[in-house]
Length: 263
Image (cartoon, rainbow, N blue to C red; front, side, top):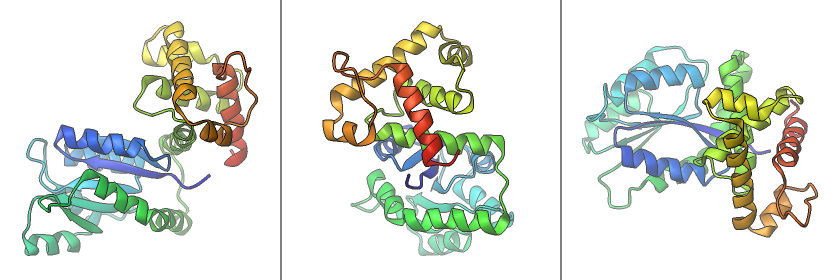
């Protein structure tokens, strides 16, 4: 399984965040940990999730704080895992750009340029992903990073989400979130009652959780190419059903992910 790159977005324009989310969801190797319009919350998420990449809006006019506040924190604190920081800004001042680089920004993308787009920002991450992944592995080795329960869960969610993306189960749909939870539950406890446990977690009935998960699977089997399904889901399927049941699907991926990732 290829490395999954985790991304934190600090941006105050809701529509821009949605654009980023939609693009990130289309890449199985990318995982969005969260979005926020607050530099203080961004710092909190940085400590909590240790993302590989931060997409940072320099001016947070509709939020709180600024991108500079976030960069100051990164520069003035000894982080075991320093993220790759991409600053997006409408500020065209060369002096500002120079200062931002000195504060630890890795790349500046100017929003005022004609060819700027959220897609271009994500394309940069895809281009740099091997270097970004290497940075994480090097930092982990140098600092002997201890995985907190939160970091461990986030890593596992990234892995599971990457597998599901490959068969066309998009993270923005509710059923995908439930399926990720279900697979993690079975990885950790093969006898878990996924309907009840997920229902309790989200205050939903077990029946509604089961229905959403099956709908996500059925939708993927209707819309994803046969070649992709045959490549990424190799278990046998009842020809009369045309798609795996929740139990078949969840247990297949729980076992596959455990084997592929030495869990």
